[in-house]
Amino acid sequence: MKTLYDLFSHVLDTEDAHDDHVNRRRALRAAVWGSEQTQSRHQWANYTVTTVARLNAPLTVLATVSATGLVTLDAAEDALPAWVQDASVQYSDHTFVISRRVSDTTLQLDGWGLGAIATNTSIRIVDDRYVLPDTVREIFEVRDEDSDIELYSVGPERFRLMQHTQNGTPSDPIAVTEVRTTGPLGQQTELRFVPAPSSQTDIAVSYVRRPRIASALHSCGSTAIAGSTVTVSSSLPYDLLSPDGLMLVVSTTASEPEPSFGFGVDEHASQIGVVHRVKSLTSRTELELFESVTAVTGKAAILTHELDFPEVAYNAAQRYAEAEFRRVGRGDVGEYWQTIQMADRELRLAMEQESKFTRQPSVPHSRPATYNYPENVSPGVS
Image (tube, rainbow, N blue to C red; front, side, top):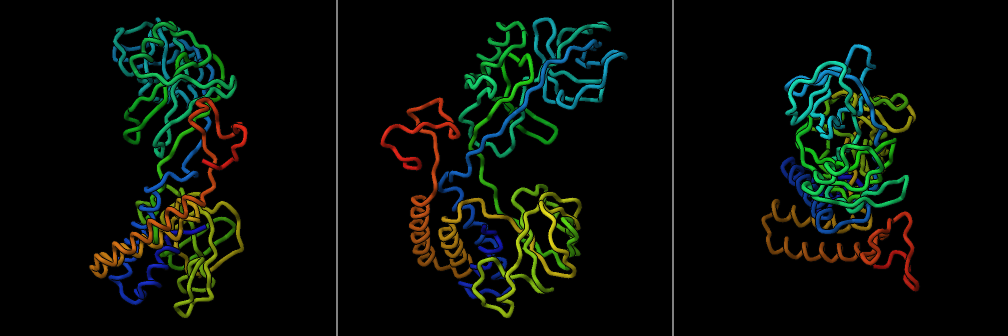
């Protein structure tokens, strides 16, 4: 496991920049740039992800609908489940997207144009939408896990036609489309299924994700750990909204820890930091680890990101970071291009060493988990 702190420390060591504040800032920028270059120049195998979307069975309720599309459940109805936030309402052969779950008994519909509907009207709520994680870059397969059948990918126009021909009757989903919408946190992409499922259905979505940008390098000050709870004296930055990929490097003393791959340049060379994976950020001075660890009091710690590429590519990241530092720190364009060529060569070597397990274009409906290799073809060879 390599972190941004490791890469930053490498640049400090190789460029002899430990004691200069400006050079340390340049080293951090160079480390971030080197990491981004290594991520963006190749689609590494660990960027392929499969997640399962669980779609719920339809829910039929009695409600009143206002002329503006505000749905209010009748008093005898139970509170709405949380999943209706990303669902749709079917009424009179029409399907309307739920834009907002106003309360446990109230929904707002998008595009309603049928006028006010009186009380005790039966409507069906169907779970036909799934909001994708914001890391999705490209979807290459959507499959019904129960029937083990891949869903057809169709455009929005074809999707609307299929919705109309299905007459709003739930069944097993056979097709899916991608729609760009505005959600509570801004722009999002969601999958919509037709027909809506008639029972609880698991849909496997296989996609290529965007690489995670390594940017965190924060001194936590005096750090205490009790079980899995970490308390720091230096407030964490506001931009650390997600714990994804965050690592805590804890020193054995009150001095800054050495990275996991240090060169022993300063007097703390033997104090290799202990690395823990962060589960959540409770507040600006408290975070939670995935596991309980030995109690720690008054030790220094660094909060940083894990580098989001295989370790075989770490040498390439080092060369890219060195090249960027030589460009911004020394203004030596010639040395910059020479080091970039070395980095490109290291990257090609890493690509050759990467462990691959990919779908072959000649077998369009195969999945990595159930792939049958052709005769005389070894796994991992492309």
